[in-house]
Length: 118
Image 1 (cartoon, rainbow, N blue to C red):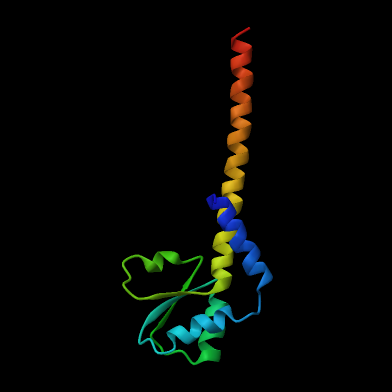
Image 2 (cartoon, helix red, strand yellow):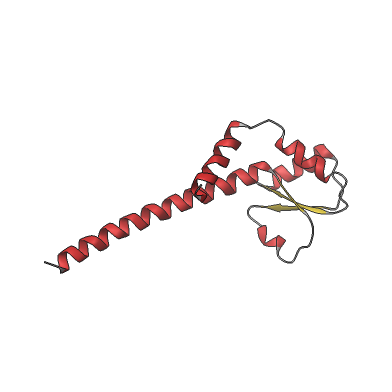
C-alpha cells in the first residue's frame, strides 16, 4: 500500500469515527503521568482538555503552530486525534499537489523535447 493510500485510509477513518472516544482513550493514558507534552490542534483544545480532565500542571501544551517546543524535549508525547487528522490530511493534500505538479512538469518537458526534436 502506498503512503498516499495509507494517509487516505487514516483520513477516512478519522472522518468516520468522530466523537467515538479517541480523546478519552488518549487522556486515560496520561492521567497518571507526572509530566508529558500534549499535541493538540490549538491551544483552545489543550485548555479544554486540561480543564475537563483535571490534568496535572506537568502537562505541557504543544500545538500544530508551535511544534518547535518539542525540540530537545524528552517528555512522553500524547497526540490528540484532531491534530493527527490535520497532519494526515495536510500531508495527503501536499503529496497530491506535488504529484500533480510533477505530472504537469513532465508534460511540459515532453512538449519541449518534441519541439527540439523537430
